[in-house]
Every structure is written in C-alpha cells, then in structure tokens.
Image (cartoon, rainbow, N blue to C red; front, side):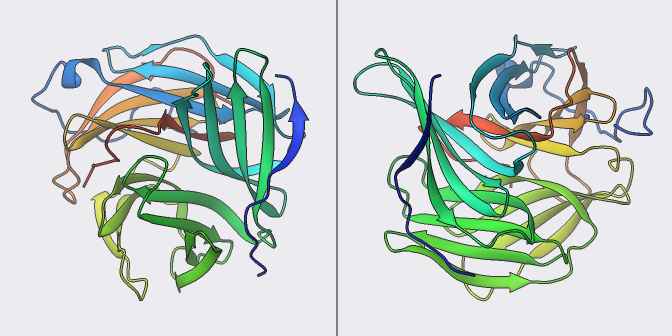
Length: 303
C-alpha cells in the first residue's frame, strides 16, 4: 500500500432490521427514564446519488427525528463505500464546516464542506490509496479538537483482518493487523481515550460484541460478548455519547428502511444495560451511515 500526505485537491463547488418484523433487539431496562435529559444523535449519511445528509435523532420515547438536511453532492452515484465519523465546527469568518474521511472507490479521502457566508464549497484531500480490499473505515482521535495528540485509523479488510494506522504530520503509518474478524457485519466506535479505543460490533449471526483495543503495539484486541443474538438484521449501527458513561445507539435496517434507537449503559459485557426506545419515524435506506458530531467537547466514553 502506498500512503500519501494529505493534499488540498478541491474537486467541487456549490453547495435499522431484516427478518426482525416488529421485534426489537434484546434489551434490558434502565433506571433513567429521561435518558440524560433527552440526548440526541446526529445521524449522517451519504445517499445513493452522492449527497451529504444529516438528521438529528432524539431520545424521547418514542424517538423523535428532525427533518433531513440535504447538503451538496460530494460523490458520484455508488462511489462511496464506507465512512468514518464527520465533525463540524464554526468558522472564524462565519458559518460552519463539516469534515470527515470516507472510502470513495479504492481511495481514502478527507472531505471538507464549508458553509460560509460568501457561498458554500467542498473539496477532497487524498489520504491513502490502494484501499479496494477494505470494507469499513474509522478514525479515533484523542482528545477532540484541531490538534489531537493521538490519531489512529482502523479499517476492516475483506478477509476479516482489522488493520490500524497512525496518522501524524508526515502521513499515515501502519500500526498493526489482527485477523479473525470475518464474522463482523458492522461496527461503530464507542470509546476513545488516551490509552485505548473501543468498538461495538454486530456479527452476521446476530451477536453484539465490544472490541477493546489498547493504543500500545502490537495490536491486541480484547473481545467481549454483550448480547448473543437478534442483532443480525442491522446494516449499520451508529453511537453517540449520552451523559458521562452512556451512549445512544441508532441501529439501521436499510432493507426495510427502518431505524431503532437504544440507550446503552457503560459497556460491561453481558451486564451492559440496553434500553430500547423504539422505532424512529422516517425512512432510512441510504447506503452509508455515520456519526456527525461536534469537533469540540469530550470524546466518546462508552466503556
């Protein structure tokens, strides 16, 4: 694989359960009926024709969803294969910007969308090429902000191998691989600290696991079962922090266009508390889903 330093290549201007029926995933009850004073999750997506979209899901019971905000077309139809988290921030001249990494074809790009007073624009920067063998991408940066002290990227290869890179001022550097994840269907980042990252993952057979990865080398994941069944129908799961150690989890079944919202407590194996909040109103059939979150604030803290 050839890695490259990010370039400023502006390319454009202008601006969740198959087979589940009415059932929901296995869930335990939580003692917090207000769900941390109504947390919310900004669900980002890239549509089949390449538009950038976001929609806020709120933890009422039943859940509430805002209208979809459709942004610029940032990709060709079918070009986007996977996306990491996108972050938004205010811009000094006014307005705001969104930025995130995604796999477009066989290349990983960083994309920036600027919504500024003199007119919106967007552009891409090349991050890594030769990425055709990878089916997912995630970025774990600690702490949040413009200048994280640790920035790791994770990708799942099509043979079930988890691959990690470190990104610094010089570019991307390989930082270990670990085989044995061919059963994983989808996963989402739930914790980023100075010393470890943790993912929540579903398997093709329907199990729900945490994958705890120390920041040290070699890459040595620790896998724990959270639930043993009923999660196989989701094509995407997306998590956002809620309170000090909990999170909201959106689980999306693109086959039926359905999304479900869960309140999930501190990750603790099969003792993890999961409360089903119900089905989210609307249709959810975009091919790519991800978390859209503020660049400021505290990082994910679900474990």
